[in-house]
Image (cartoon, rainbow, N blue to C red):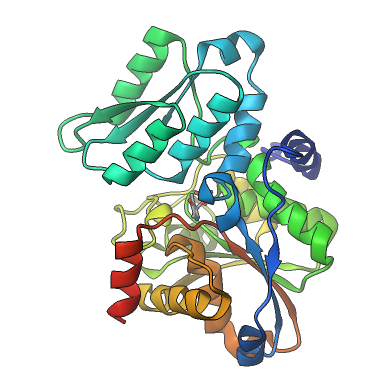
Length: 322
Ligand SMILES: *Cc1c(COP(=O)(O)O)cnc(C)c1O
C-alpha cells in the first residue's frame, strides 16, 4: 500500500509556518442556527482569512517550502479565483515573483485584486488557447515553479490548518462539514480530524450539479465530469486529484450535495443573522448542516466557512432573487 500524501505532522508543521502570518480566524455562533437544528454549530470563519479564503494557508505553506533558488526565481499558478490571490500574496510576502494565468474574460475585479497583490497577470483566451500548455511554456522559459490549487501535499497540509485551529479552539466535534472542490481543504481537514478525534464524522459537501467526488467515493476511483453549472464557482472542478482522492477515500466518512437554491438560502441566513458575507462555495457546509437539520440534534457540529469573495451586486442579485 502506498503512503498517503499527507499526515497530521505535515499539517502541524504547516501550522507552525503560518503562525503570525495567516490570521487565526474566529469561530462564530448563531442561536437561531442552533435552534433550527437542535445542534451546537461552530462556524470557522475562513472568509475572514487573508485574501478572503482559506487558500492563503495552502499557498503560503507551498511557497515557504520551495528551495532557496526556486524561491528567488518565482512561482506560477492558473486560477481566476481565490488561489490566484493566495499565490500572489504568498509570493509577495516571500519577496518573489508570481505569474498568474487567468482567462481574459475573468471578472475585472479579480484581475485587479491579483495585480494589487503584486502578481503579473497573463491573460489567455479560454476558447482557443490551452492554458496548461501556455503555463508550462512560461514556467519552463522563466524557471517558475507551478503551484496547483489542490493536488499538492504542501497545499493540502496548509489547508488542513483551518481544521486544526478549529479543534484547538473548540475541542471535540461529532461532525465536521467541509466545502469540496478538488479536495485540498477536505483532505487536509480530514487528516486532522482522524488523527485527533477519530469518532468525528467528516462530511465533504459539493454542489448538486457536480457530484463527481460523491461518485468517486462510491465507486472507489476518480470519476470526471463536465464542468458543472453552479453558482459555487470555487467547486466547479471536474475531478478530484490523484493525491487528494486517496486521502479522502481513507479519511472521509461521506460526501453530500446541496442545490444552488439551498446555497442562496444559506448565504441570506449568514448575512441577515450573523452579518457575514459568504460566497456561494463558502456556504456549502452551512447549507448541508441545515439540510441535515434535526439529524444533528444534540451534536457538536463544525462548519467550515471557506471564503467570502463575491461582488456585492452579484451577492445582492442572488439573495434578492430567491
Ligand atoms: C477553492 C475553494 C473551495 C474548494 O477547495 P478545494 O481544496 O478545491 O476542495 C471551497 N471554497 C472556496 C471559497 C474556495 O476558494
